[in-house]
Image 1 (cartoon, rainbow, N blue to C red):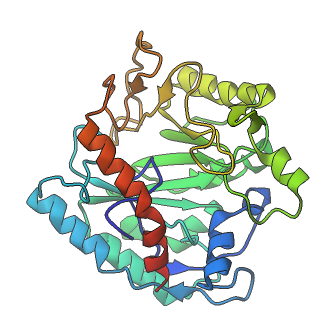
Image 2 (spheres, rainbow, N blue to C red):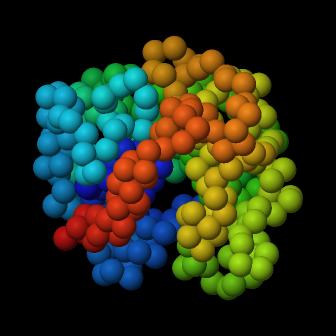
Length: 329
């Protein structure tokens, strides 16, 4: 965990441990699985050890920075959400907090860390929402700094949504990434936030044909563009979110790299965040005349970004790979 991350819907990532087991088709091209085995950090799969990382001191450090109101720098960037100094922490990008094969004492250490960092909003994302109710301590149920989320990449895994909602939380969110099929009936009652994104990366799938099938984009000359049928899938989710007044964060179209296909949808960007305490609902702004206008996101709806800020973010992306390596040491 470092002070920057390549994941655009959070401020930091924290991996208390590394290792997991694939549970559904969304896992088939898992970047964490591929990266971890390539780097030799941990073996993936049932019965394999989960390895603690050495980055545990970082969340308390960030909590203190927020509490003191430290000035922003090229390392300590402004929060992705406007109007708050609180930081979002995605936990975990190289593991699943509610993985039943994680030693119980590891999870107890994590719960204690969350209790000690009230200025951080912890985004706990899982593909095992059926285990949240059993594993989350009673004093952390509906805690003001815990957001609970589950991954739903296709209609067949929407069963996870009611399981997620069994445990109260200030924010319930869905990560529809990678999006692998149409979801015409997305249950959004009780959901405060939706993230959508396409498959990125080159690894783990068994054949190029399978990887091509999973991607939302195709190569046209030297540009990656959304497949027309996949645009329909994304618009369908967007329209359901708009109708239900659920904030939407469209992360990427995907491709060989997360940035290959961009993240514009019908001439605009969707960079919305929930506001805990009001059911997640936020006023929907009218599209701006500028087709590149960012809606309720990192840039706060501004039409341009200062060059200095752009340079800082570019440097932050370059440090992202280094952060991943440090987390495994």
